[in-house]
Image 1 (cartoon, rainbow, N blue to C red):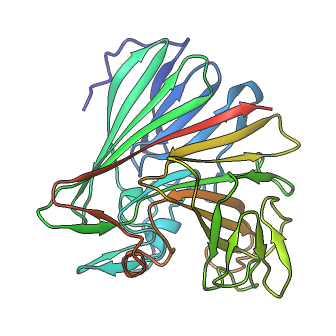
Image 2 (cartoon, one colour):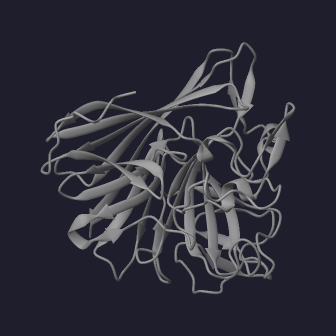
Length: 349
């Protein structure tokens, strides 16, 4: 790990700042257009993706905001709370199980696996006014894994580039789920915001209701984006983000053409759009989580309006055993690695 105390500091061009947020180490990557804050002390969460010309943060901040896991210990034994009670919103790296708490091969995983709540090591790979690059690393606690993420920001570009590799550190073959849990919210996403996907993408709706107030898409339905069979009959256009109070839902999108998946999110009231591109060879699915205030009980109490558009290796959100059973789980041979690249951009419209 680098010792940053005597690093040459800079307040122009591309630059890195090492800060503490509520007791958690964090790194800020910045150029003339973007400011990105990554919680190295918890999950390498991206908790800020600010388009500086408009002071517009694209990622969503949860009602609880950033919480230090060591200061906000769960008040009860609850595998959901290990993630949710310290969930800041933003963008998480999820591995080796995605979604609900689950048990696999003798290990119990809380909500969204384990690495999203663990501290990550950080090293500076490149640091000058034209380009900054950091390397983040974490080793699994229950799962035999080593994850390495390389994050780059270049001068004059409102684009963050990611290269990530997961390695099986054991001598046995293991299945896994791997996800980039990216969420968008106010002020960037509001009712009437729009989601654009490539032609030909297909979807499968989650079998169970996500909230107690019903659902938008018929259970277990298969469809071609953007039109999905509506719960109760008719069709629903998923491109437009609906009003506050709309029932919560979750669908799994796949069959992206080519080797690169992409989506865009825009708001007619904002002068910038988000574009995300990623390698579909490793992450062939896109989870579309829809929470518009429909969950009236724990953990949201009707106070959350957000969408998650989450590239994923597998589905559903029930955890690793179900992904193994449906054949979508990623398989890692002894000592083998899987990788993906991702590009996240804030683009003027």
